[in-house]
Length: 308
Image (cartoon, rainbow, N blue to C red; front, side, top):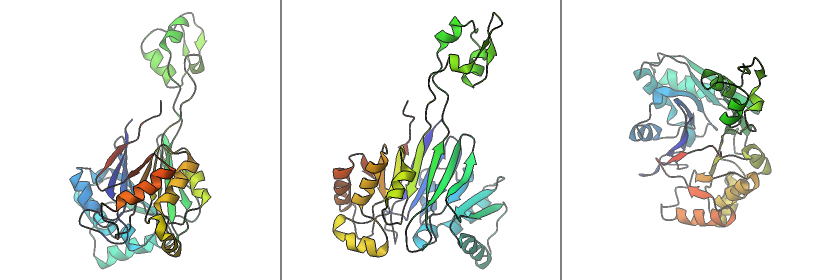
C-alpha cells in the first residue's frame, strides 16, 4: 500500500512567487488527507495533478491566516467535482466559526456534507481501515495542534515452506492464513497463522508539526516517525525572535527529530526573510544535529516506505 507526502506549500507568514503558504497532502493508497491549507494550496494540487475529490479529511493546526486562507476556495472547489462523501475538517476552537462565516459571507454553493469537529483535548480524532490520526497540543500564540498518522501493525512475513510442511495446500488457504485466519490442513489438523507467520511488523508513521515552541513532548508524539514534517522557521541566530513569536529554529527541529529517532525530517514553514539560497543555511544548522534532514520545497513528493 503506497503512502506519499506532497508538499503543497512550504512558506510561513506570506506567500512568495515560488513558495506558497504551508500545506501538506498525504496520500494513502486512494485516500487523501490535507494538513493545513494555506494560500496557494489549489495551485499545487493542480500542478501535481492530484484529485482533490479524494480528500476525505482536512486537519488544521490553528486559525492564523497563513494556515487557513486556502480553505474557502477548497470548499467551493469540491462542489465542482460531484462529491458524494462527506468532508471532515478538524481543528482547534473557532475553526467551525471560521468556516461558517466564510460560507455565509461568500454565499458559497456547497452540495456535499461538511462535518466540522473542534478538538478540545489530545487523542485520536480520525481513523479508518488500518490507521488512526491523533492530535496533540502545541505551544503557539493561540490554540494549535500537531498531528500524527499511524498505521496499525501488519501481519508478519508469510513462510510458504512452513505452510507446505504443515499440509496446507497452495491457494486460497494460504491467503486466509496471511490474513490471520486459521485453516484446516490436508490431514484435518487446524493450522494457526502464528505457525506460518514471522513476527508482527510495524506500520508507518507520519507527523506534522508547525507553529510552536520546541518542547520535549513533541518528540514523544513523533517518536519513531518515518517522516517528520516540522517547522524550521528561523536560523539559530534569531532564537530570540523565535521565542518571542513562539516558533522554533531549524536546529531545534533537528534536536526534536534526533530525540524522537525519526527516519527523516523535512523542514517547513520558512520565514519569508529567507531566499531559496538562504535556506541552505537552515539546512546546514539542522544537519549538524540530525543528518537525515531535508528542506521541504513546494511540489516535492516524498514516498514513505515500510521499513521491512
